[in-house]
Each structure stands twice: as C-alpha cells, then as structure tokens.
Amino acid sequence: MRILILGGSQFLGRAIAAHACAAGHDVTCAARGLAGPIAPGARFVRIDRDVADGLAPLTGATFDAVVDVSRHPGQVRRAVAALKRPNVHWTFVSTISVYADNRIPGQRADTAPLREPAAEDLEHSTDAIYGAAKVACEQAVGGDAFICRAGLIAGPEDPTGRFAYWPARLARGGEVLAPGSPDDAVQFIDVRDLAQWIVHAAEVRLTGIYDGIGPVRSRGEFMAECASALNASCTFTWVDRAFLEAHDVRRWAGPRSLPIWLPLPDFAGFLTRDTSPAREAGLTSRPPGNTARDTLHWLHVSGGPVVGLTGDEEKDVLAAWHAERVT
Ligand SMILES: NC(=O)c1ccc[n+]([C@@H]2O[C@H](COP(=O)([O-])OP(=O)(O)OC[C@H]3O[C@@H](n4cnc5c(N)ncnc54)[C@H](OP(=O)(O)O)[C@@H]3O)[C@@H](O)[C@H]2O)c1
Image (cartoon, rainbow, N blue to C red; front, side, top):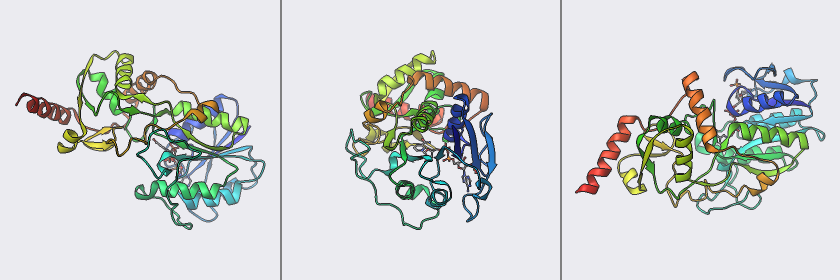
C-alpha cells in the first residue's frame, strides 16, 4: 500500500510511519521538516500546509491511503481539496477533546454530543479552541473517513512530558504523592498501539468514528503495575482534590502538576470512555508497565521532557499533608 502521512515528523505521526514501513508499505511523510526527522525507511516530501499552493510538491503522486494528524482546519481543508479522492482511504486523527460533556462516564464515540465547531473559515487552532477546531477539522474531512479520536497518547518520544512524569517519579521509589483515590479511573493509549491500529485501519479500509484509547484502569492498579515493571519500591500516599488544590497542585500537565490527574467529578467522563467499538475494530493495548518501562528507557537515552511537580515540591506537599494529619 502507498501511504501518505501528512505529518510524520514527530511522536504519533512518526510512530505511524515506522509501523507502516515495518509492515512493508510504501510510506511518504510530508511536512516542513521542522519538528524532527521522519522514520527510517519513509520518503520525505517537504510541504507547507499553511500556504495556498503548499501541497504542490505532492502533485501527481498517487496514494492508497492518507493519514492526517493536523489540528488546524485550514490545513485540513486544503488537504481534503487537493488529495481526497473516492478510492483513497482517509484517516483523520482527532481527539476526545471534541466532546461537549466531560462529566458522564462511559460515553461512546457514536452517540456522545460534540462541542460546537470552530468558525467554518478558521485557519489555525490554539490551545483554547483545540476541541472546537478538531470538530471543524472532522467536518471538513467528511463522513466517509476513519476518524480516530485519540485519548491521552503515551510512550517513547512524547513531546508533552505528561505520562513520562509517572515512570520518572516511580523509578525514584519512596513515598509517592498520588492524586485522588486508588479507585479513580485512568485511560490512555501507547503511541505504538495507536499507530499499529491506524495502519491496520488503512489496510482493512475501516471507516467511521472511534475513540482511540486503551481500557479504563484504576489509578491504583496503574501505579502499582508501573512501579512493579520498573522494579521500584514505592508507597503511595493518596491525597484528595481539596488538599491538592489548596496547595496549588495543578491538574493534567505543566509546572506544579500531577500529570494525568483531573479533578472529579468535573472530568469523570474524560478518562472513562467506552472503547469497546475500537477494540472490536482491532485496537489492542499493551500492559501499562510496558509503556512505563519503554518511556523510562527513552527518557534515559534521549533526555526527553518530563513535566509536573519537582521532587522538592512533592516533598513539601507530602510534609504538609502529614502535618495536617498530626495536628
Ligand atoms: N498527544 C496526545 O496525548 C494527544 C491526545 C489526543 C489527540 N492527539 C492528536 O494526535 C495527533 C498527534 O500527532 P503527532 O504526534 O504527529 O504531533 P502533531 O503535533 O500533531 O504533528 C504535527 C505534524 O504536522 C507537521 N506540520 C505542522 N505544521 C505544518 C505545516 N504548516 N505544513 C506541513 N506540515 C506541518 C509537523 O511537522 P513539521 O513541523 O516538521 O512541519 C508534524 O509532523 C494530533 O492530531 C493530536 O491532535 C494527541
């Protein structure tokens, strides 16, 4: 199969290219060449999707399948106009941030209500309108494509440093500040599993809308499995939302955060999506310990980013928690 990846020079796009090459496909990655190198074995074509004739270097080339990872409606509209043909299988990588309701657990891709789309003629997305812009991108792609709404993507080469916090922290061992309760839900997908499924979808010409995430696990199970895979000796001190927020421990990502933690019940639906349709359509998920081990290895060899509380910040919060329990 001749596969064109619009992107392919970082994280998920590069993993899709690597997997497609390993599966014996003829792979072209088209990007500006700024984000990073493409996967070995893939062909690189330099394009700029932000200008009107920026896809011209692809003129005349034919593909059996196209995968687009863009978040910018202008880029998606131009790609659809230039490259989408009835016999070309089209994958658009979207996000679970398209959903309107983050509170209700167990929602499914085919029935959950969406946010209002961003303005029809929007060129560029920003963090503030990421979900709405992806809705607009999906609408520009149309109903005959494979729309893969990814959840949190984890694993080697993750430029966000979010998931990496946990293997990096657990590997140090000792008393670990853990957010919420061990029964709270965690849901993510290893980048390599998602990449494999996206290539599989092109091979079998899967269409329709799916959430691309792994199974729901409890946070306690997730932490214990990762610690065990890393041979780390950890004890977990579970600290409630009110205390964390009172001590300026932030949600999800960034400085002073406990990554992948979202306050409940506000986000009870975000990490509890029903992904049985995706599993029935071929998505598989490796054990979390495997993702944790490989992410830690990648951190060691690459010095890749880690976000979240520093060791000293974590110690201060734990000390405050224990002090409050004594008094
Ligand atoms: N990370 C997560 O946890 C998460 C969660 C849910 C959904 N998602 C979705 O998953 C996908 C992740 O994709 P990704 O990891 O491959 O990263 P990405 O940040 O979406 O990659 C963007 C790609 O597009 C290329 N690009 C950007 N601007 C361009 C331009 N003007 N012209 C041509 N190419 C351009 C970049 O390469 P150059 O800069 O070299 O041009 C890069 O290869 C995205 O769709 C994201 O929304 C991610």
